[in-house]
Image 1 (cartoon, rainbow, N blue to C red):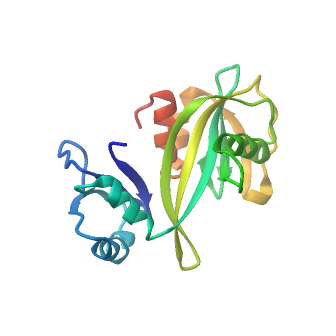
Image 2: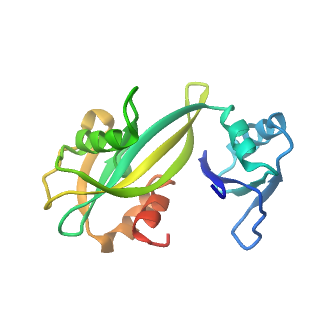
Image 3: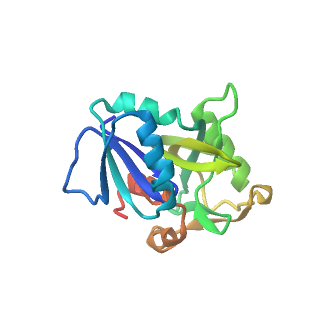
Length: 206
């Protein structure tokens, strides 16, 4: 992997071995050890919003391994579903537009989880995975424990505009089919990682 990108509490972190000054960057930080990085992230960056930070590492794989030790790491999977009419399935979760996903259970494969979660959260079946899209990373807290969640995303297909049933116990209030022309407006009110998934899946520049 050429870089590791994390949606970090309202900011974007990129762990890389190149400055790439041509990209939008708020801060360039030189990695000098895990304790210094911890102080920088949780003492400063966490309190900010909207920064795009490049963390320069001589060995980005080792830096990424060190970075993960600061969190409890959890794995999830989900899918962007397109039907035979070319419409895409979105859900409304906690007041924001999202696409279905959920935690990978013990012994479960990522692809199996993605299909299961879409089925459970939207009440539809007959899903077929067309291809992987990408893996995203974002952070949040459970109590005082910082969590790093990796989510594997897949492009899926199903039949016609199948009737959906949102899983309300998962704070999902809507599960709707959206025309491609309406996606850009919808993404203005989505979780931070979702536009990237859509861009990777559909080639849409957000």
